[in-house]
Image (cartoon, rainbow, N blue to C red; front, top):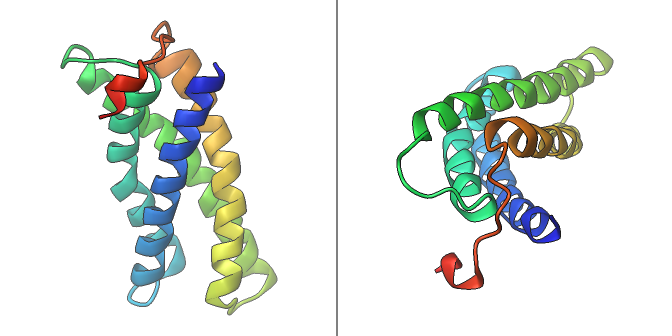
Length: 138
């Protein structure tokens, strides 16, 4: 499981950086909650695909549509967590700065990532607990 967790975290860091960059760009042209939803959705499909292959070692096209659909449900859990955090921030301060929004989103995304790992491990990829060999990373 430690190898799985390490791969999941590496993919999570890359996904989070892409998500935050997208959020930052979109937050200048749309409201914070809309920017959050679009940024999170934009990275969810790639995140699920990467975790399917690299973290859980699932290969081939069998089950890919089901995995993506279940991944979108996991995305929904993350969206609720991050949107709730943003909503709360905007209740505390009507005009929080971008740095405050990003800080809140980083913390909320860490919580969402933990939830997503549990959902992926127990539900989405269930029995797929075999770790890919180091050669499979290429």
